[in-house]
Image (cartoon, rainbow, N blue to C red; front, side):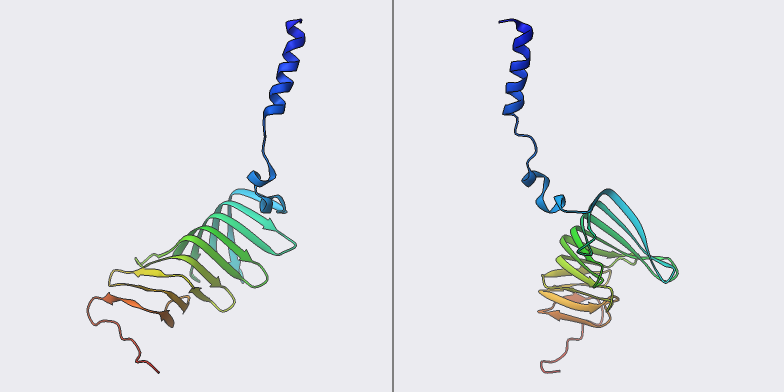
Length: 182
């Protein structure tokens, strides 16, 4: 057989043996996204005031369902004067536009500019009520405190905090825990 005719047959045989990319490898959920953004970054404002910078390795936007699914999420939160207050990082995060809730999962860490750090596997931030909660165990560290628990619910500034099975220590005066039934 002529070698010139044999080459197309060999190439077609190789092409048939290649599996290529399947829908499962690409991710079925990503296939239904309206937009996919890589190395995404945006600024969020509230009443004309810059409130946060949001960055993600990848963002899948679902316009009809009104949510965004992030991979490699990083959010820098600012106060009313534009000063950075804290940074949240997680492997994944889903933001629901209608409810204003962010559901962060996987190595979630919130670190403040004054040296406090909270780590957990799962954290929910509710923009409407300005509260954070976790149904997973967590650890908390600051220059004067170290602690944790099996779950928590708190205002965003951690002034009104409810912890399930708290543990930890504080340098100096100690932590005052309520008596059972109070």
